[in-house]
Amino acid sequence: EIVLTQSPATLSLSPGERATLSCRASQSVGSGYLAWYQQKPGQAPRLLIYGSTTRATGIPDRFSGSGSGTDFTLTISRLEPEDFAGYYCHQFGTSPWTFGQGTRVEIK
Amino acid sequence: QVQLQESGPGLVKPSQTLSLTCTVSGASISGGSFYWSWIRQPAGKGLEWIGRIYTSGSTYYNPSLKSRVTMSLDRYRNQVSLFLNSVTAADTAVYFCARSSATNPYHYYMDVWGKGTTVTVSS
Image 1: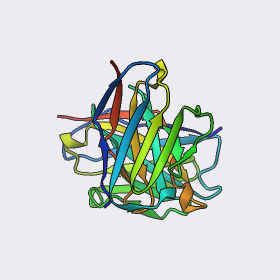
Image 2: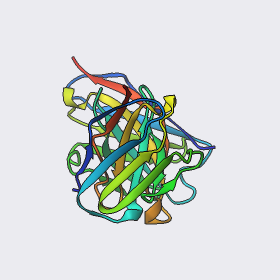
Image 3: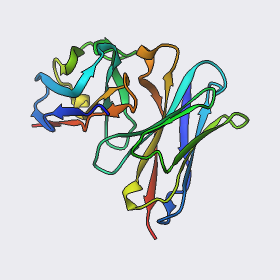
Image 4: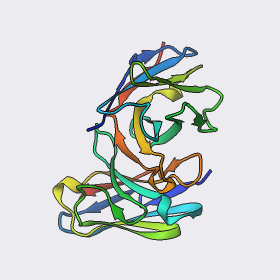
């Protein structure tokens, strides 16, 4: 199974700052098979990015994804109040599909 | 617009079988080419993918749970079901169902999710 390790576990930032979230895979993941989700307390995950770089429908352009192979990054260019939440990377290129353990972006 | 709604008992006794249903509205589970997945999340923890069932009824289960999991489709009721037997407290979690397109491997990401249902395993 491909293990996804996200870092940091928690990111403490202020609104307007830039957030950089990392997702590292235990073996190569095709860049087309990596997605990112946002999850707020009490809610289901929401798809943000698929194919490592493509924003899902309705996702603001302050969210961007990059990376290939074993290293992937989610960047939020300028944090808005509604962006403070949990974020998960997900690979679906190899079964079993797996998720990272998550990064929590909290208000500093 | 496709919507998913999970339902089932909120409390299950240890050693019993957890049974959940995901009711799909806005689309037929028999139409198109889709994967229907179950994912769970213990309180305060991350997401664990349980497995998937294809439109045809073929399944793939996470090896970590494979010996205890069954998924099925009820085409008449337009529902996807999850059965997890021999439950313990470690199975206490919020359970989500989600849909993926299966037409292209690059589209296997889960783009539609239910709101989730909480299951507690306790005597």
